[in-house]
Image (cartoon, rainbow, N blue to C red; front, side, top):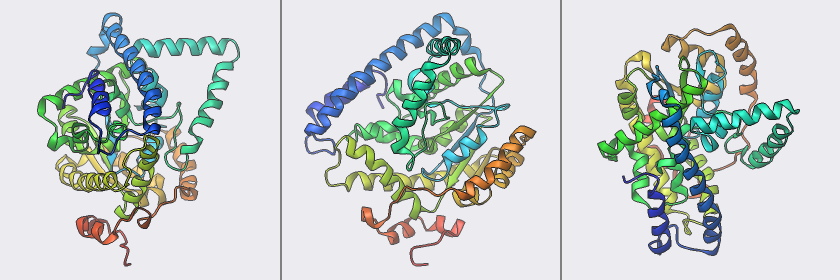
Length: 385
């Protein structure tokens, strides 16, 4: 995969001259969205690369930081990974995660220091900018609340750190025709070794920059369902890492993911028939289930665990306690108090994100046959039950 800063220009060239009869054929709506998005996206990435260069001059000691025993939450999308991350991220004595504003606007050390400096100035004059940004944050992400809880100040998926090298799977919504981007969804099996190493080196550098700001004694807490196809590579890159695999009934996961991704498909006016992208997602998720259950059990018992969304929702406190015991973590009194409060709230939560298999013309029997081992392993109810 020829990922990197300049790969964006290759994708734009393909969009302009080779997108006919693809999912991303040119339409007035797509032209307008791309005309607004691409200059902004490339402007931001250019600033990041300048700041990465400056980091290597002014803060080069970040390279010597050791990434100790990171915890990765992976699994199939829409399976409780966000809930689990936000729970464990409250164990602030041990873990640190990227927040969304850090991922999008400040992956470099010098950028982080710049914004933190502005924050201190804002505090000195009564926080007017903070209050404005907080209001804009609520307005901007309110429409996504039923699909994915998001906020600039909350922990988020750090696959956004891979945007500067054009290796973030979310880009598939913008460029669905590019086969090499789809290789990210089959990372361990389809990505060439040299590309794996290059992407992991960049990812490691981003984690080290984060620890330079947060403290080298902290442990990285990373949540990325899109990292599920790279758990073998993650385990090799971080030999002392721990990985949690989140699982949910495929009859719930697949229509939920297709529904949430269609928001992006509609934004970029892709996939006019609505079936090609759907089928690609189903094939990807089938691989996720198989790869997760093939690779993760090969890790030592004290370095991996599986969690179902159903059990997490039923008893948050007990699930986290079991994870901590398995990974030999202590639960601090402050974190225990937080878990006590969270248990009742999790049970009361009901998603307002509505979807169905029929809505996307997905045959449940096909899913039950192709993923029979998942239904058997976890006892998930089938459509005929």
